[in-house]
Image: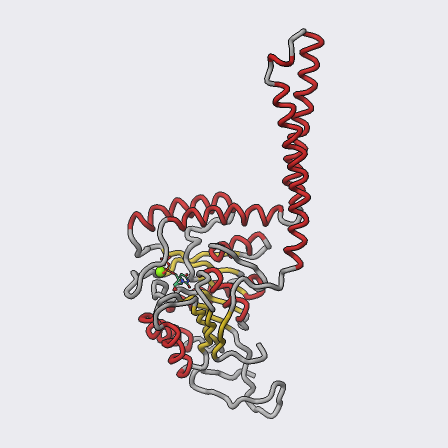
Length: 345
Ligand code: UDP
Ligand code: MG
């Protein structure tokens, strides 16, 4: 049976769950749009209008999850006004500012669509690109990442530095994209549900996903200069991003068995210490060279000590990994209020 459904025009009466009397049961939500919001009061009406315009053409049931990340301006009030007009808009109000990554994370946790799309609220991304992202997903990809090919941010501040950063990330991660930082991305929900993101890590979702076997594609998207409000980031973000990348890389490859990393290094150190000890003895016995006149005693002691402590650190890390897995249920953000959500969700 094919029924065309235009979200926003029909609002069926709420029925008890599982009720069969409804001749036109609501289809499940196909698409969840997530938008992180920090001081975007003036951008909210236009953002909503743009999203609704792009989404209503798709003939898919959708939800827009706006995460108010502790804004200090009238963003929450603006969201409330929009949520009254549009039941597809759901709002999560954070207790304080937790950062863009936590906001996207919360959106993913609360999303019910099979496809999840993240988009900046400041209108730098263009909702009109959403259909192209979806079309690319339909070609069989699990993640489609936007590439701000003509980027409209300050020249040095963004364009040059970020080009270098993107190269570094591409090299280290082995997942080759031009633009990791573009928030406009589409994911199949099964590849992102359950990822835990910290710091600046939302930009690495394609990397995680690819390591897990997901097919990742990139398409050029539009990028506009900011009209209202201002960017929340400066150059220091580059360092955070690179440090987070090292963590991601380390956690992915070795997280489950940190003892292999620390222990491996520890064993190498022990071997170095032992070799240096034997060389020291050999020099003394066969060449008559006093061990005190060489750096070998120092190398021996350092090697043995570093070796032992690395192995102990590996054991500690193993304990932490276990604790981590057991505390998986915890979130790193707190929600004060949920608007327009189904209470059972
Ligand atoms: N944002 C957020 N929490 C923050 C900082 C930013 O939710 O602590 C949101 C912000 O409202 C915007 C998006 O994240 O929708 C991107 O932020 P911004 O425009 O400042 O970043 P830039 O475009 O300069 O990279
Ligand atoms: Mg921006």
